[in-house]
Amino acid sequence: MNTKKQPTKGNKMKKIVMMISLISVIGLNLNTAANALVLVNGYFKSNGTYVGSHYRTNPDGYCYNNFSGC
Image (cartoon, rainbow, N blue to C red; front, top):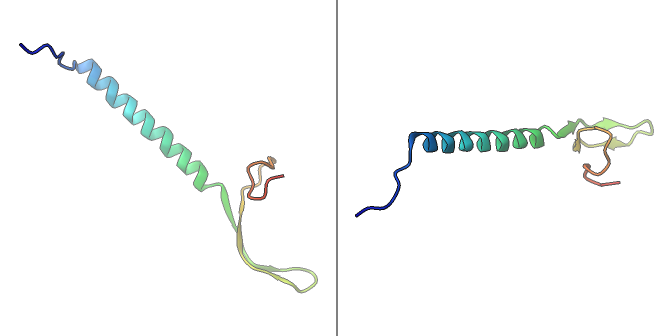
């Protein structure tokens, strides 16, 4: 005698919706992290010193989400 309950259509649909939601949230977080870096092109300072190109975090007014901290 098999006592296992067969998954209903509603349970399957609920699992599918939850997985799609989870994947969407993870995708949005990865996209936000990818947009947080800005490439700064190299430039010459007024004293003639060359500053090479580098990445910096997106300016947003918070010091704790920068590479160097506060």
